[in-house]
Length: 375
Image 1 (cartoon, helix red, strand yellow):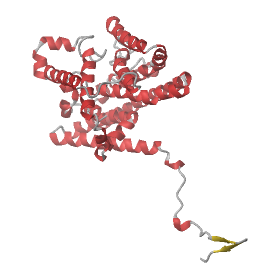
Image 2 (cartoon, rainbow, N blue to C red):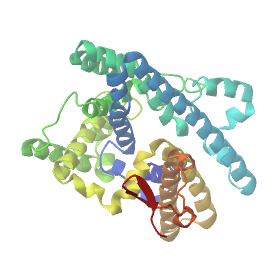
Image 3 (cartoon, helix red, strand yellow):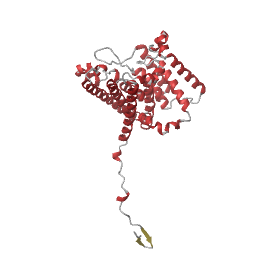
Image 4 (cartoon, rainbow, N blue to C red):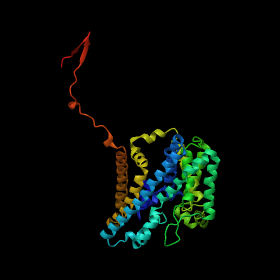
């Protein structure tokens, strides 16, 4: 969530130091993989305990929540842009997000927004996540038959996407398609799901796998270092290759290889030391991760507002630090607030103060009589 915030602040110098600058994969892979891993825990257990139909109902309910979160985020950003355009006439923020077609033709805009055939670039992660999640009941059915069918489906759909250009429309006035193609990105989501469901297990203490993963991650840093990447035609063409490279929209396979390598390196280093993550210093990060949907929406909104703020106060090392750190603090506040609200504290029984409790008479049974104790 913090990296996503940094990446979406316009002209943010901190963007030069996020993981995307040191290899083909970035925060999007982290977000989608962790969503898949968490889905295995949240939804896989429902399928196991309550059966297919209730499990499917739970998935559809989550998709319903994501759908309205997407619509809400779009409307909030429309409002933010309108306010920004009126407060700062020198900046056309509506145009920067390419929202004028929606305002110029709201009838067509609403129709296509609600049917997800209008997905502006800034708002494309949640629709992608929702479509991938809708595949989950089929994945569960295939796993009942044989786990190999799950791998065949995910790999086959991914390959077909690269070969036959399976895509979804993103605008009603052009042939632009969704930037995040769910038929390609499902590969990383269900990689997380498979490991979260423990359908496959990793050899976490294998030094040879660690060395190979670390070596590959270092190689990617060298290859994707901007001066080398820009001056090497082969690397440039590899990056834009649909299937083998790092093309982002269809999720080039190099992005998958890079991410799983980094993930294995982290898992290997933390293996047997997981209690480190329970330390108080990491709790804000844990809380943000536990409230992923609401903090994601807050992150996307705050990052755009942060860009407006930088337009007014200027972009210096100090203002970049101020805006980014303020965004981090606000995301943590959002996470803790969401956690507090979801705990429904109003349902708890209020504690009665000790002074308001009426004194009780202690009694002692003596023979057949009950005698009240003094006091």
